[in-house]
Amino acid sequence: MSDRLAVLLQYLLPKQMLTVFAGKLAGTRGGAPTTRLIRWFVGRYGVNMSEAANSDIAAYPTFNEFFTRSLKPGVRPLAQSPLICPVDGAISQFGRIERDHIYQAKEHTYSTTALVGGDAALARQFEDGQFATIYLSPKDYHRIHMPCAGRLLRMIHVPGDLFSVNPATARGVPGLFARNERVVCVFEAEQGPVRGPFVMALVGATIVGSIATVWHGVVNPPRPGMIRDWPYDAQYIRLQQGDEMGRFLLGSTVVLLFPREWDTSFNPDWGVARPVRMGEVMA
Image 1: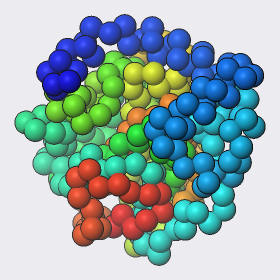
Image 2: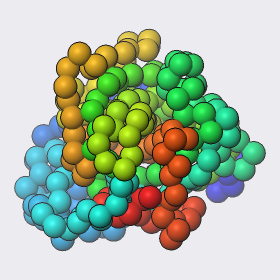
Image 3: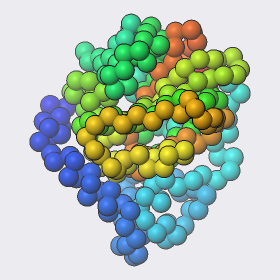
Image 4: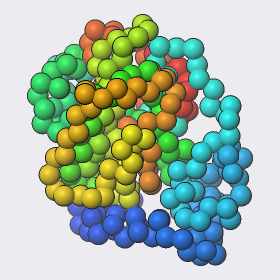
């Protein structure tokens, strides 16, 4: 299928309806039919169940519990590095933020202000900084971890579209990551070689039933159609490097923003479309 046709279908599909239906189905305790669905999914996408803490497909009562499965201890060792990769996936793009513009694909860019939900003051902290966009495919481990230690300052749920997130839509849908529904998490790195603010934006997609964080639980649904903003600066929620910070219930993309002052030098082995694993050297 051509990129043009794939993108056209995305505009025509009832994405919200499909996502609500998929979310309900994925959370249903369906017994034998659920087990058959999981078994088909594992075979279709080549999921490596040998890494799962529980490799028995029949042990998962819902598709969501399978999809957000934990891993065996030690299968994702943490590199000795100021920044580690927060997820399993593939690199979509990474590099310098040009003033406030992030490169998406082909001729497409989008602004940091749009990504974080319109907060220009927050976005200014990342002018001429660096970004990394990592895509999680269906076969990947779908828990999200901290690239470095950080204190949570704020969480913003930004409503939006639910286009599929893949190379074809990245090439064909302008501003994809700033159009789709997303949960923007703002942290402050307080110790070590990297200090200052950084952002982890968890971007939804078609059939992504919900996004959850460890401090809040499920963020969406509900989907009230307006920006929701939770400040945490009056609390002290601090996560260590490598700690789980959230998860996708059906997967999508993480966009990371780092300030110019960090002068991040990304792993020289990184390249667009390269597979990455949680815990490996990022910078």
